Amino acid sequence: MNNSSDENHFHFSEDEIVYNSRSPIRRTPIQAQYHVQAERKRREKLSDLFIALSKLVPGLKKLDKASVLEDANKHIKELQERLKTLEEEKKNNSTAPEIMVERCIISTCSGNTSSFKGATLELIPEIKVKIQGKNVLVKILCEKKYHGSISSMSSELEKLHLTILDTRILRFGCCTFDITLKAQMDNEFSVTMKDIIEHLQQGIFQLHS
Amino acid sequence: MNNSSDENHFHFSEDEIVYNSRSPIRRTPIQAQYHVQAERKRREKLSDLFIALSKLVPGLKKLDKASVLEDANKHIKELQERLKTLEEEKKNNSTAPEIMVERCIISTCSGNTSSFKGATLELIPEIKVKIQGKNVLVKILCEKKYHGSISSMSSELEKLHLTILDTRILRFGCCTFDITLKAQMDNEFSVTMKDIIEHLQQGIFQLHS
DNA sequence: ATGTACACGTGAGGC
DNA sequence: TGCCTCACGTGTACA
Image 1: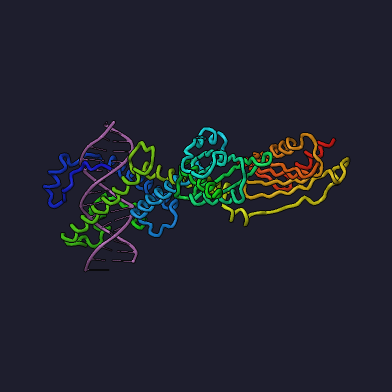
Image 2: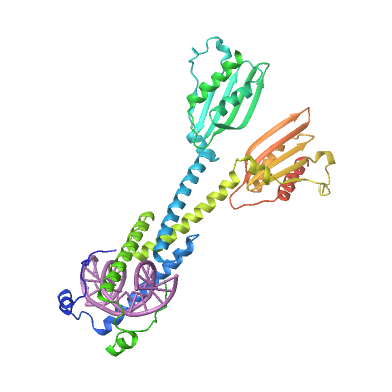
């Protein structure tokens, strides 16, 4: 791994040799033999490491050093990428409660009812959205129930490429409904809380008309 | 990567050299120069690959070839292990419904009520268990409710190193209860359906006494 | 014959 | 000094 030796010294003639090596005898014969043996050992070690490396890389056809290094290179890159995506996925799908808690972001729909021209205020439900990674939790509290409201909300969420995983409806009294929806963003899709709230309001609005 | 050359040939004397190389001149000077250049190219390529590899391995202190190969070796092993565990985890936590369906195994508790000496038959609830990887689904239909039955069942499941993720109780009429429990086996623990059913029966039995 | 890949012994240089 | 690593040119084997 060092390029310190000069690059263009060929052994054309004997005087050149003398010129390049200032002191022709740098080692005693015995020292030279130690050197040879040490170098042999070093090469053997490297060779073993190459063999070990080649065994770790799957689908290796050529066994020459360059190919081993090249494919080991590719393999590490591939492993690292796969690990990265998997770990990201895991974070988003994590069921560990401590992560759930610390990541919760809560947004409450606050007004902006001007776009609902025909609907009275009490018909517009309270909508809460929590997003944690790819997971979405929607809570809707509405004072009246119309036929098809659940399917309408589901449809709105699916328009946003959300896969609905769970739906629960709690009726309180005759006309108060507490609806909880759990959903997950589809791969490569991302939505904001604003998107979700607006779409749900649209869906409910269309029900009334 | 070949060990075909003989292992113990040192250059002690000139006759030895002559003996080892049958035809002293095998290349014309021009051919020799091509050879030298080709070898240079090969070494350069290998060197580049070493450098590239060293950049892929994090936390590398020594940059000599042996260390690079050694640490690349370790790093690949580590990556592969981490990938393996992560992928297994993913399989178990998978929310994909098609996997859920094809993996479902259903077992129904069938009798063996002889060990419940004091309890009448109708007190022993119907218990169903589904296991899919690390996930466990328990359904209990019982005709009477006793104070503490939920906590008792939870306690039994936790004795088996199951983490309870969800509990739902549906009351039908005055005394029929449909209980659904979702749980997950803790890391490095594994239970059979038989284990679960027996423990739950024990828990219910102790409630009655 | 041509090209490719390897192991070898060796000198240089860094600690 | 010794020890270690490297790049080099070379001989050789294989396709």
